[in-house]
Length: 191
Ligand code: GLN
Image 1 (cartoon, rainbow, N blue to C red):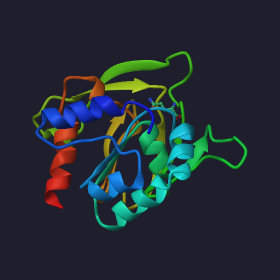
Image 2: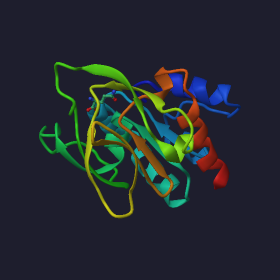
Image 3: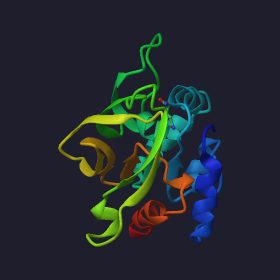
């Protein structure tokens, strides 16, 4: 609906998956999994509510379909947003991922940066770290007991998994490192 969905689609197609943009509830009903891209979480929240895509996402989750939220997408999936949702009435959250996130949490001077993150669950113990691009990225301030912390940057949680839900503060679709998308595809294959 909004944000960096084209790169995700391109990456999934490169990896041999059939991928398409999800704009309407029926698109999500037809899919085996869903990526909610980075972008602007307040806008994504408004649009998914307006088009009934929020309910389709909840249905998909109920059906056990894996969902991956990158950056703004992870914010939309979160149970709690501690900073940056002070607008009237707050912003739409799906509450599927038991985390508290702070938006734009790496500071305004450092709008974006790239770094390498150790994520053994994805790379294996011997694999090189994941190339990660952060753009006005959120930090996961706390995570509930059902959440596995997969990766951290400077001590801050930036990659999580809770059952069939994967979340990252960073954008793997902006690099040539395809391992996070491969991992998400394997979650879909498992189902
Ligand atoms: N700052 C955005 C938000 O709070 C997220 C940025 C991104 O997705 N790259 O929604």
